[in-house]
Length: 262
Image (cartoon, rainbow, N blue to C red; front, side, top):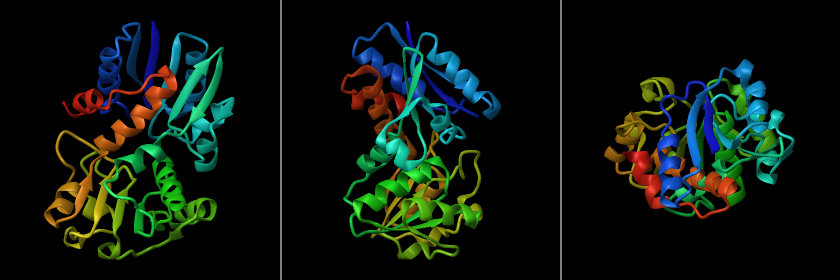
């Protein structure tokens, strides 16, 4: 059995096991299995090294381990090195290779090209780093807000973009929530520099958080006429790229999307 997993803390909410097991079944890879493993930060390195020396072929990495995934790796993909965060690990002969599929997954989920767009990214963690890196390289004008301003300043100094403390959300063509706000049911309009009336029909709003129902942020954006991309679509896109890293097979997007939304 070739094992795969998603590593996070918490991780019980993840749709990745259902999504990847559906993909494996669709391609007849019956000797593969994907699971969720909750790992506290102080056990991350130890656990990954044990996995690499066992029957695991790879893993996805989610909050709060995307930075730690770089430190444990023996080698990095060019994108993971430039972004400074990894969401995908591949294991071979006891060695760990780190990749970042978040950036390409995010871009492929968008309905339009973003060159020359004015974009607001909320957050400064691993997911936000991938989004900012991708948008800057696509030619977007990127501004970054984070509750702790120093983190957004450091991110922009490394990757590009401009830190902002009080953004006017109505003035952006693209807004991306790359924070964890909403994952635990938090009110995004109490925690983020946004108001429900900010959204308009000239915008694309992306919420990387997902749940069984549209998040409050997505629902408000839709009510304001904005086009929206939810976290499940981004999950599917980055997951497909991870799947291809591990298996060398083209990922079955339709089956992955159906399982993730079920």
